[in-house]
Image (cartoon, rainbow, N blue to C red; front, top):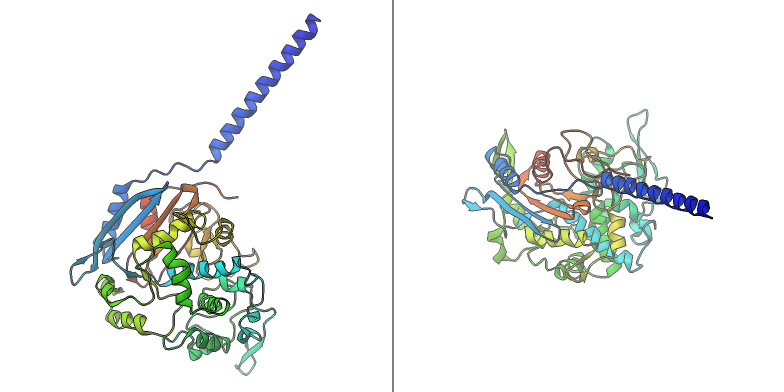
Length: 430
């Protein structure tokens, strides 16, 4: 009996030790898998903003960072209007161009949550003008362009991940020439006319076979109008902007806000020059008939941060739910099939794929010069070099404003390096 008790005690002891070792190994494994703790160096961020102005890449720059449930940093450098010596301030309104696109995507996905469409429905089920699309197939022996029927219909998913085959301006094929001739984004068109003109131009490739940045988000806006029965801008105002308290964000700003609008600057021969057409462009944005889904909004740091915080919060901000958390997850995971190897300029954004109106980081930065960031973040930017991103791993969102054209990716590299640190890699991907 004593031997049996000793043996039992020995076995129990061995089991306890084994269990303890297993727990220690699991704890170490979890420790190794944890994201590095991100400690924000505000002096480094401040220096980065000042450097952008000092070296002539921006007339003015500002950034707002939200982390761990609170505002972690706000800072500015330089001027919203350099010639008038008007400083970049917290309430400066800037043209955000393609940062309009995620707002459009959120609006459309609200309608998806209501069962208005399926993501893999043919687009033509709701917009019949896109039913019989032709695809450019090269030139014949005589040098004339050849067109054929698309191998499959454009789907709603295609217009949300830029795989529809649409063009977005001039290019090197007759299909691009046809797009330019159709002029779908002329500011005196409404969205219905935009869609009619776009559908008359051939596609650059079969739907679902390539990623090519395009007019597709303006088609999303047309779809919002069709499915909601409301003008697109009114739908967005009523269902996204007002519920989020984004009171300074609009396609057409009232006159009393225009003095807060930042000037736009272009790099000419290495120097920033105030855009001579800026005033005309501002008036065009005020007076045009076209309310684009892919461009046209102007906003403030605080307003756009409210949008970013909603996404960081899984579709909810301060008790107001805009989307389900599962819908935000769906939008912010890579939607591109591995077979889609032609991806245009997307690889220049880093180790990313594309979700629904967001680029999505799927692995750690692979090169020293690549933008810093964390796996799982999603983001987009604008033609005047604006940027925002949402980083769930670090409970962080950032909005960065400048008004520099053409697009200057070095500004994004520098603000990210300032926030994360030049050597930051973050958690490993899957």
